[in-house]
Image (cartoon, rainbow, N blue to C red; front, side, top):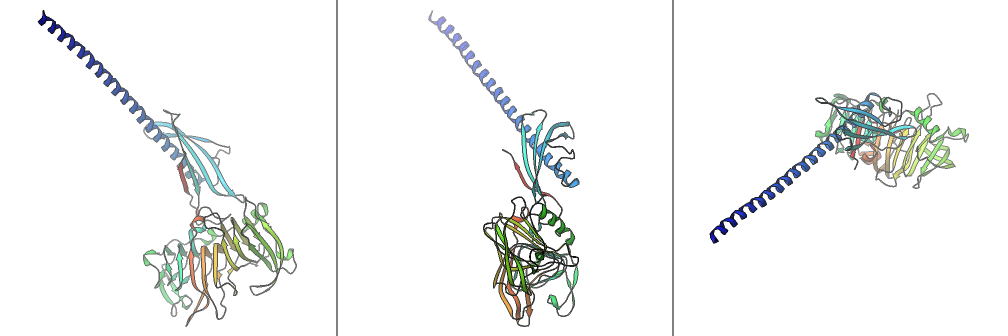
Length: 453
């Protein structure tokens, strides 16, 4: 009796264990299948997200291509408001999804300064999984360079370039630099005006200063016509959107030009200059205090201009006479010009139709912050006998059609002008410059690329 009971009990125990382990295996297998299924779905979702992101990126690339063929067209060639949808094709599988584009422009003074493109992509398999990319498309402004000239130049001892510089002519480099120095010349005729004894044939760049590793020549010349400001366009924009002042004689018959004094509250005072001795103001009469419109910080003077002060915000000042044939205007740097801050929110573009002149009474330490353009003439300080100053500090860009001169050398060293000149480019203005700043080149590029959360 006892033996039979034990045997039967063992059989029951084995059956129970089989059921328990079978149940456990079924649960484990079911869990594993569920885990694999969840992982598969997650992987598919991840792949669909990646595909959607790639499709959205293709949308940005497409509109970059479109703008290179149709500059300024913000309506995808349709003439209609967006958004604009396009199918995306897999070369091996046909159409697999779409991207949708929203295109808007940032404008100043009625002209496009940059273009924002929002591209959203999705697949046909998972239309609810969408990815959005935001791109900003723009061209680099002249703030790309610390210096550009259309002729030969001699950088002397005591001159420092912190930023890219370019000359269409040859370069005698005795100064210092920390970035590229480029010349469009293979060789050139260096004369005594550029520190050579007599006339000598020299390489595009030569000298005892700087770092020859950063010298590049010959390179493609910069088309000064291409980078020159369109003065008539600027005048029209100032009359339509900004501030325009006519020849000073139209306001005061004895007018010789305008004196502009920037103030740290964003406004500027304008005086009418009524008497001058060379470049020195002898008498002036207050005219008006101006505040530039937020949508167009541009003021156009149809006359000579004297400028100084503290600049707040982005402002453009143009001096040009487009009325009288053969009469070109100058800008005189009456005193230092500085920003309230160097975080990129302040910026000045100052354009002279002809020359940008530093007068004899300039301060011992002259500070110049901004982009300074001598459109058809030169940026220079004339020779004033025994008139020597200590230092110019330039934060920004000098664009001079002709030879730039701030220092005059003699047998005993500097005999007129500034002993030391320090230059540093303002990279913050390269893609966010003052209104209507000319471009360094015509190539658009993305300056912003980010994924929307």
